[in-house]
Length: 320
Image (cartoon, rainbow, N blue to C red):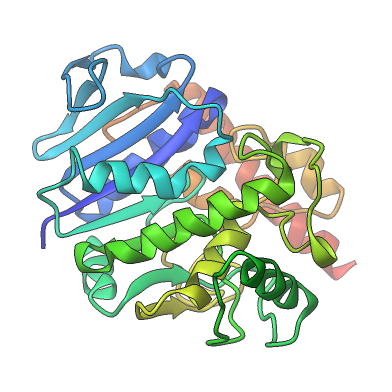
């Protein structure tokens, strides 16, 4: 299967991008990683060369290793980037990634922890999604009722499929399921009128015009994604909370949700406060010295030592 990966980042999230790409390399992925960004290019990407593409005349390409290329695409949008995922994936499938069989979106605070062939097998089962930490949401949960009522007013009728509530940080789509992305974009666009603008998101501390019935739109892209699951006829393939390391099990995509992010964390202080580092933070620091090196060797060693000490402190504190 010919597949591509995409992500969106700005600011310090370039550290997460570096770890994500290194993890893809270690997992055996070969192909193109499309990184849409706003603001400055990462300081570690100085070797990127101009590589104009349809719709992105300022695109730049960085050869990570033989067969693996990171393509930087400067974005001209006022959307909060978390709300731009469906638009970005559609633009890629219809443009630079038009020759691919499947496209995978991953947030830049995720690392890949299993061989890439697993993900290509997975996407043949339906739209690939991961269960969220706040799942399940039963059929008549107020959030689902809110989505159902709101979208019905706009001619989109949702059909309950399962209680699993999925996370917006990962979406894998085979080209045959492109219609799912159209549905996700539609639910995003319709939601915009309720919250005020797609430039708003929970992570930006913005003041929504409204978050809807029972705050059913306070997670913006994730709410619209879950609504799209119920609005579409495409098959979906959901793996449980273990996929993103939200619970014990075989982690596929450890996801550092919330904050502080791994590149922002003071692990010793957090551990003394009863918050030891979790699997996603450990995965990040395990992937910062691959083909892309966003840190010096001394910084990596220091942070990894802090991580080990914080884990030990966490075990002691948890037993106290």
